[in-house]
Image (cartoon, rainbow, N blue to C red; front, side):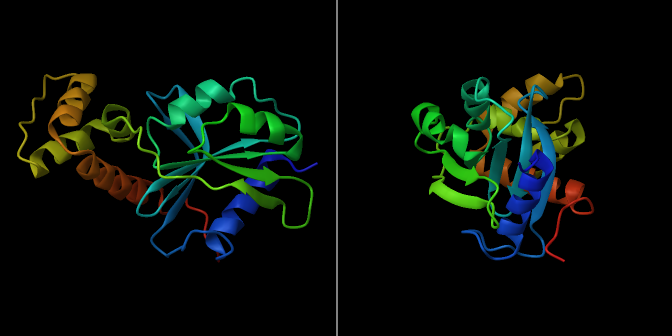
Length: 192
């Protein structure tokens, strides 16, 4: 039985070795365990290229009990979401997973991966929760870059509310991608 770490390695290889639907580039970053949604959730893997793609892993030893609430959280932040589950979870995952979420079957075969359903572009992203991936100094930087006032007394949630109300989501997404790539470039998994 593949462990979650073995499954992660299979997914990382799938992304970075050109076997996947993704075109991996040197400046892309694969992040191992990224906290999101006010640090209440953790994505097993996140691929940051021009989009943010999240992967949730459910091994044979896991259950899908928490998946519906986890999935709802993922869809507030990520451009694409994949559930990577053992084939014992295949039927249940199809029943309870929204159609825009991709499903990858991960099992004990040599390649270890088979796409059951492709992930679609997520149109449910909440810019408030997306901005949660930025640190306070980065939020202030985003304000300055977009001619928004920096109010030092403002609490971080107030800054995020103001940014999400006043800036297009694409500007927030680009800042998040830029900062995540800088933050995690030295820790990222690579194909080398």
